[in-house]
Length: 390
Image 1 (cartoon, rainbow, N blue to C red):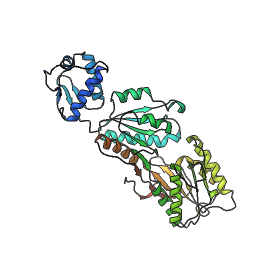
Image 2: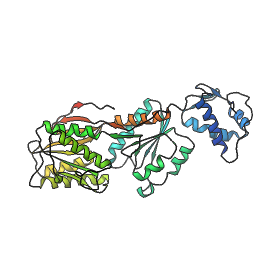
Image 3: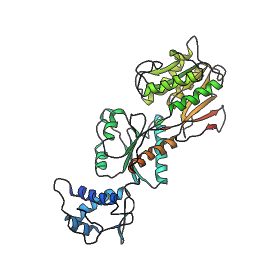
Image 4: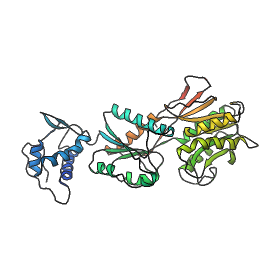
């Protein structure tokens, strides 16, 4: 039977004992909002009237209404009352989760950039947000974070944006009952990743256009076998795209010129990895004419090794490096740059959550890279490729 909570003199509503009263009241009000019985602009009865209607305390009513206030779905104005300000089909409040401390370590610069772009975009849309940083040891992060679980159960947030996590965390995060979007490569429909096919099309195409016939690569992307013998998984897809574009452009490589790792490296290990692996390439009897280094966390160590080996760039080696938008890399070498657009990734993450709230289907989004060519001493790079979603 339909209950009327818009009337100032509503009938009594009997609640069940097996579930907390405030949660039942919250569910009833949410049902009226979603059905349109409480359209935007409707005034709710006073907390005293609602307490009488539900035969409970004023405190319980206020607790039930708190979730709607935090989600931006009601407006409480002293002297005027409580009004419905938005339906639940519009994103008004979102949680942002990172499974590591964003504020320590240069290796977190990309994720700080993502967070800054998320905040700017959400604030421009008048969407409330709360940052959840999980600072527990990695071994404990496979277990749910109690505070976030409680917030999700109370529907304090409409959706969840997962900016940084590991495979063990994904399971409980996706079972919170919230529309979510994740940054990275988990095999989920609501994910935002980078367009690696386009990455290699631009990077290898640039090396070919500059006269390279042979190419090497340094990357800590994880594989369990040699990358040129691809099989399955995200790392395999990355190297499969690399090999496909090599063939398309008539370029060749060797096993010993593609430097990677069989174990997952911590970000703080990337600098040493780039340094060590470039020396491994350059101390071989035959060397590639071009080199692609990805991601930016490996670039600094590679630059140090190139300078130590006194490599003549670009005469003896042509370079394409990676960096993140908003985080320039000090580089005295002539190189082209593949640029990750943090702004595009942030918009894509928000868009995936919005589509789910609106009841629309979602599929993975790949964000393309930007391309820049810079010579030593150049103050502003010459951008030749835009950053757009597709």
